[in-house]
Image (cartoon, rainbow, N blue to C red; front, side):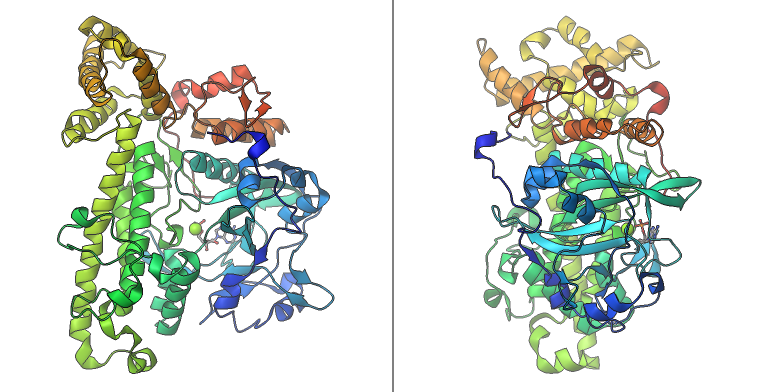
Length: 632
Ligand code: AMP
Ligand code: MG
């Protein structure tokens, strides 16, 4: 629940926000600009795309922007970064989020912390795509929230050309920036691990050519880490084993907070469910040198990344979210975040084959393929880390570090790496399934999960939803609102079944068959709820608790494609601005029954009751399961 204002932290100013440059001080820069000063001296228009080798990043500053217009800010983001709410109204803030004001860099002395773009590569559509990198994203600094101690890396997307821009222009259009701004904050409010967004800025003088000429924009986004699987791929592809090791060590020590935070050795590798969750806090020294199994610390790092990604996919599947361009290792986060939002979507009608990507004719990015695709990407990471994993207990042997593996070590190394990666695959499946079941159990309003629930409740429900064309997220919200007392008889269940259909009524399979299918499922569900909550004849108070618990996990609002399209149209053509605050407010408080007039976070919200109602109702018939192109 939201904290009352009085106990909320007040936040600090941008100037007082603690800043660091850990990524750039720990990893090697592009040799062409060994120091920030060498990059800063170069006129901005001389920075262009090229190959960058043996480096984790290039120093590069954002382009200057004329008359940036700050369109919207996420109050939740301000709070989580640790900034004062009033800070967002200052001139410094407006210039900062447009890339015009740098913090940390001393212009006169030509020294200090400086912005940078990451070097990474990636497999795209299953093929090696070479060097990619931050082609239009520029990181500014890491900020530590003084209250919570949480550190985030702040980054501008759409801030101009970098050495990694390849054939493109370094810009982002308003349309896709609105989508990223809203969805980042919406996913976070649904407790789905994700990168975040602080602000959306319109660049009034920027004209960006895509399928048509469009307005340009910048999103200030932030994350615990922007490192992707592709950051490892690039070094592996170039045979740069020193950098693979350096980056792994950086990720373990700086991103995950130390080797000792990584999962301990599996007790029973044959059956990862039995030992999940793995012991945490087992120090590296107890792990190293344990003979042939020798899961060394790099294996534990791999497993941490695998587990985090299993958790995020479980969330996507449980909430019907699709990234849209997943089979790209550059779009898979080491921290296990939803990242790089292009043609993403929340599912409308439940359809496992739905893909939000207009160009995805092979359904590579479809809902049902997401868990497999992420594992495919993680196997590529396993290959990048393969030598470090496979060398086992000899990973710190100086001759191995200096010269690599000897011929006679190769066979056992490959065998060990394969074994450990396969084992991590089992752990991925087990972690995914456990989390998916946990989330679905919560969504169905149950406190415990029985083995039989999987078939009787989950599978039968998903089959019914697919066959009857029911809306995935609406289903759970509407189910939340049903009192078990109201579905006690077959007649009552048949009648209640109607609430799950679209407003145009049940699908053409015949309304009585459709209602019958749902009524039968409701009967199963009702008996599980009664058992699980120990409801007796006189337990309306407990049932009310169950309803409240369900509403806290089943959103009333998700930013669907058609709603985002409407907002984009109104902002671009109608020059509306406040509609962005309203969608952001609903996206960041998705579990409310209504918003207009409600007091949330201690403030009475002035919304638009008619608009809210439309946005939580059935999607218009012609605007369901929309698809989106990749151009952004
Ligand atoms: P994406 O398909 O958005 O994940 O991007 C793939 C790669 O292309 C990344 O390295 C991006 O930084 C780069 N990229 C995409 N769009 C642009 C653009 N407009 N300007 C520069 N680089 C871009
Ligand atoms: Mg990407």
